[in-house]
Image (cartoon, rainbow, N blue to C red; front, side, top):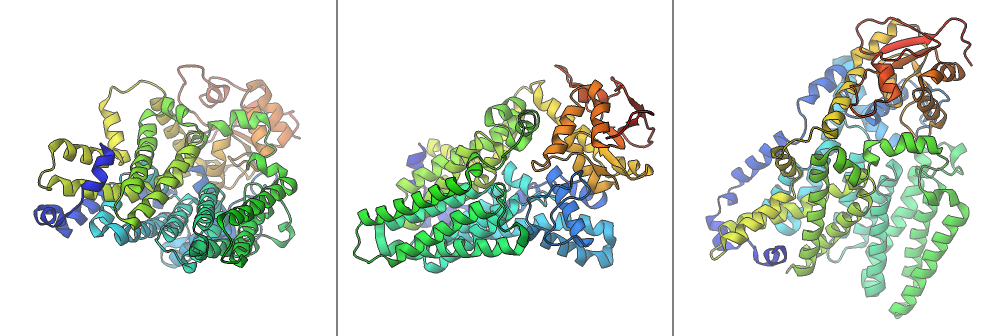
Length: 607
C-alpha cells in the first residue's frame, strides 16, 4: 500500500483548488499548534527560577561553563570540585555561546537568573536553527506546504522535543543541527565542491563537539566515495571538498580546544589523534582521487579506494588499538555492569520496551516507518532531486536504527531526519483527500501512515491501552524522587555544613556541584572511574559504607530517599529511606531537605 501511495498521491491543480490546506494561514496555524505542544514550556519557570535542568549532563555542562567564567583556563577541562579532578571530554566550543548568553544577561538579570536565561535561550536558539535547516531543505524540493508540515511533524517527535527542551544545554542538539545540514548539503543533484566543503566543515564541527555522530559522518564519506567510484570525475567535486574540509578543519578545531601538552595524547572518547588520523586519511584519499587521470576506469578507482581504506584502518589499529573497542576503554566490570548499562540512554530497545513501552513505541516506530517510507520513495519517486534526498534520509534512518536498537542514544540524530519524509508524506496525504477518483481506503491509509511518523500519536495510542502497573510507573516515581533530591533548595540546605567532600550515589553528583559548595566523590562520567567505583562499592553494602568513606576521605555521606521497589529493593534505596542505619556513621541533622546526611563516627579514621 505504501509503495502505491508515494508516486500517485501528488498535489495537482484540481486538488490545489479544492484543498483548504492551500491557505497558508491554516497551515501555519497547524504548525503553531504543534509548536505550542512541542516542548515542556511549563518547565521554563523551573529552569529560570531554580535551575532545574532536565539531565545530569546539562547540570555538569553549566558547572563547566560557570568554572570558565570564574577564570578556569580555556584548556583546563578538569572538574576540580570532583575528587581526583577528572578531565571532562566535552568541548569548549559549546561552552562559549552559553557563557556569552550569561554575560549578556548578567547586567540586567543578576548572576543567578542569567544562568537560567542562558539555559532556556540556548536550546531555543538551536531549535530555531534546526527548524530553519529543516524548512529550507524540504521546501527546495517539495514546496512550502510540505516544509511547513515537516515542522509540524518535528514538533510531534518525543526525541527531537526532548533534546531541545528548555535547559538542554548538552551537545546532542548541536550535533543534530550539524549532521542534518551536512546531509542536506550533500543530497543535492550535482552537488558542488562548495557543498562538499560545507559538509566536511560541519562534520569536523560535530566531531569536535562529540563523537556520537561519527557513524553518520562515516556513512556520508562512504557514500561520496561510492559515487566517485561509479561516476568518476563527474562526482569528484563534493568528494574532494568533503575530504579536504574534514581533513583540515578537524585538526584546526582540535588545536583550538586542546591544550598543547595533550596534542599527542590518545583519547578514544573525544577528538584526538585516532580520529584525526581517520579525518586526515579521508582528506588524503580525496586528494589522491583528484590526481588520477580522467581516463582511469572503475577498476583502478576501486583499487585506490581499497588501498587507502586499508591504510587508514590498518594505521588506526596499529597506532590506536585501544580505540577499536570503543570509547569506554579501561572501564572495570563493576562500573560497566552496575552503572553504564543502566544509564537510560544506553539501554537497548528491548529493555526500554520492558520499562517504558510507550516511550519505546514513540521513539522507535517513527524511525522504522520513516526508514521504510524514505526507501520506497527513493526507489519509486518520479523526481530525481526528491529521490536523492529520500535516499540520504533512508540511509540516516536505517543507520540510526542499527545503532539505536542496542543503545537508545543511537536514535538521537536519526530522529531528526524523520520530518524530512514525514512532511512531504503528510503533504501528499492531504492532497489525496481532495484528489478526484482517490478511494477512501487510499486516503485513510495515506493519512494513517503520515500520522504514524509522529511520535506523540504513539504516546496517545499507548495511553488508551490498559496501563501496566509496572516498571514505567516505578521509573517515573524514581525520577521524581531524584528530581526532588537534586532540587536547588534541597542541595543548598547542605550549605549550612562547612565545605567538605561528599560521598553520594553517582547521579546526585552534578546537582551537588551545581547547587552547593561541597565537592563530590562521584558523578556519572566515565572518565572519573575511581569515584564511580567508590560510590558503587559504598552503596552496595551498608557494612562497607563507612570503610569506603574513610578510604576516600569523605567528610559527609549523603543519600536520597527513593521510592520502595516492590521487587528487590537495593541497599542504597533502603539507606536513603532510613530503613538501614549504616554502622560506623553518625547522622548529621540538616533541616529543609529530603536528603539524609551522615559523617564518620568518632574514632573512625579517614583515609
